[in-house]
Image 1 (tube, helix red, strand yellow):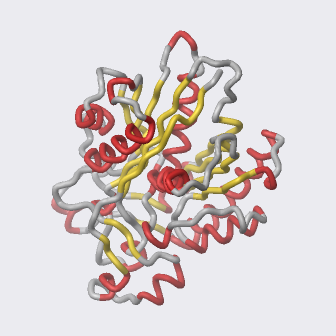
Image 2 (tube, rainbow, N blue to C red; image 1 turned 180 degrees about the horizontal axis):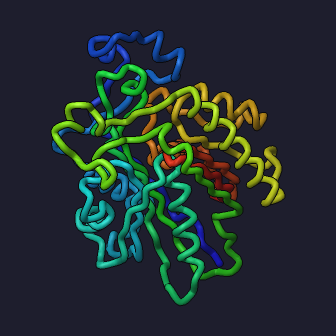
Amino acid sequence: MGIRIKGVGSYVPERVLTNADFEKMVDTSDEWIVTRTGIRERHIGSPEQACSDIAAEAAKAALANTGLAATDLDMIIVSTISPDMVIPNTAALVQKKIGAGMCPAFDIEAACTGLIYSMNIAYGMMSVPTFNYRRVMIIGAEKISTLVDYTDRSTCVLFGDGASAVILENDGDPETPDFMVASKLGADGKYGSLLCVPAGGSAMPASAETVANRLHHIQMQGGKTFQLAVLSMARTCQLVLREADVSLDQVRWAIPHQANERIIDAVATRLKAEDKVFRNVARFGNTSSASIGIALDELNRTGQLERGDYILATAFGAGLTWGAALIRW
């Protein structure tokens, strides 16, 4: 069908929060954080920046990378767990901020797996000729710092803000191979309580009590989450490669969700892909749905991708959700 990746872009806020900064905030140390997570610093949005502002900057970077105008877009999809507000959706706010036309714009919420979910949604909709969606921008964007409890040393050191954008284009040339080679998505709601923000929704509306009890912040059972993350990402990558009949030797880069260096290492070991795995978690921390796109943009900007390269992307997040996609650059 000729649906390809036209270009990518990313953005992280200027403010950098280092491990040394955390030593002044909670009972922790640079050694403790690096040993357990591999993270050395993360970017944090300013009080004036909302998620849509961070997303819009990544969108502008992707448009600049492709030479397209915002009015060329036929759809905008934003994946986020930290939207500006409940309504309207963040994608509509991004649409306004970048000057796009009145194209469809909507959000999805699949936590850290969101960009892979968005790729599948966009690819499916672009594959229907009567829909006539030629150019679709998918964005993973988070101001996740607004959900972080900065008194909880086990979680506050993990997360950073940022956004990434991928523009997909159907060039109408049947000779152009599609970017999506194979993909698998999954979810298991029985583990939802392992990683959640308990309050703020219809199950537990905001109240003075929920605020006082810090229930609007991320809560995580790290040990069990770690085990399930490694198992699900490695297994799903193996299934995707088998379905595509592509060997790991043919893959140029493996991009796991940048959650934690130990998780990344464990997935790489299970896949026997240590020499192919891209890592930037030390500089950005866990940016949730933005992380895979930030990595993809960095590889592109530094000249480490060539057209036709296979990239194996995988992620795991709250829900629990997981997924993997073998994509062609």
